[in-house]
Image 1 (cartoon, one colour):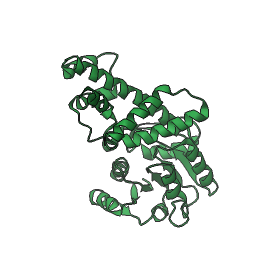
Image 2: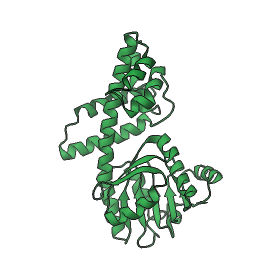
Image 3: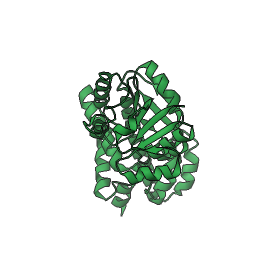
Image 4: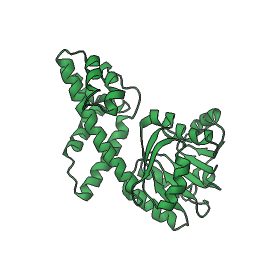
Length: 292
């Protein structure tokens, strides 16, 4: 068992840190909103730190799960409170945030200069996957460092794969988000079409989920989309952040992302409807409102 720090206790980080504690690791948590860390301690064995710097002292592994590039830079490298300030040589930093590949490489280089290691390790599986401990983790880093980290990550993952050097995990997560956006939009259009045609869409979903149209989104979001329920899951605001990262990377590498760009615009329309915190399956709502 290892001594670990977990920084960022949002809807994903809270249960992930909990799985580490249940697996027997000695967990110290930090969250910007201290009450969230206190709530975690009510549910799990561990300690609460007053800053990322304090949380990381003496840790063998430091996990981060924060909002964006700037958040990651702050929790790692802030002059007063950054987790890297007092970390012991050889400490492995594992970032589960969804960020740009650029900041992952920047963080790895800066940490290496301090004798520290870094793995970028964004996740897929959503809040339910985090709570059940069955996340898919996409990693970038050195093989030996990944091997050390993977033995700890398995507490909340059903798949944890090294895909290449630092940055590869974030690039793979971008591929994931491109694919998810396309599937959700296709599902939204299909369901809206069927409802306009007067079909019993619950029965239709039962049938087509047995064939080539089947997907995680259909299985887990099809019925709730039909019912117009979106008060759960991965928020539109977060997806737009992720798609912004995708589009920026695409501009750098020359990828054609016509459908992704269009769906990003559709999500902006959902935000304008007040749905920034709705689940990403709410793409159907803009079609439903066109129907009136």
